[in-house]
Length: 165
Image 1 (cartoon, rainbow, N blue to C red):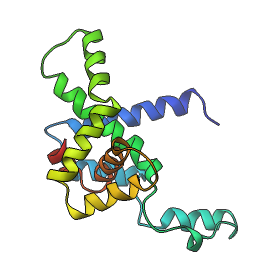
Image 2 (image 1 turned 60 degrees about the vertical axis):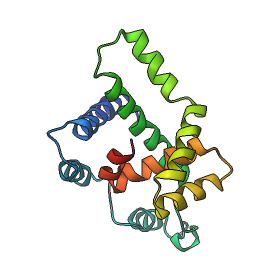
Image 3 (image 1 turned 30 degrees about the vertical axis):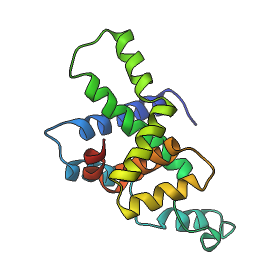
């Protein structure tokens, strides 16, 4: 049952991961150690096996289409991008209202579309371009594809995320 304790735990976990992610003294190895310890990362296909076991075989993992689940990656990418934008803006003290305005301005869809197209043309690896194209084939914007890429990189290659953002 969702309640105050679960909400408080979620906020604490988000704060811990955000701090470990942005802290200069912390490394990607530290972050991965924390994530593995709390069970956020598991071997590929582990969740499908567990769900098949829980449902008594009703859920069949072999019927799942291959590829990424982009709707799950986009919010993570958006959160990672928001952290980087906030970190950049915090280098110079701002009024709270000015800070919120600038973060919202930087995360507008047209801004992300422009950044995504420029990244795709200039800096994307073949694998990154493929992931973004897969997200675009879902019928969504370049901003959505870029957020999916950032979410994927936050999970798999945090150092590459640092290079991009």
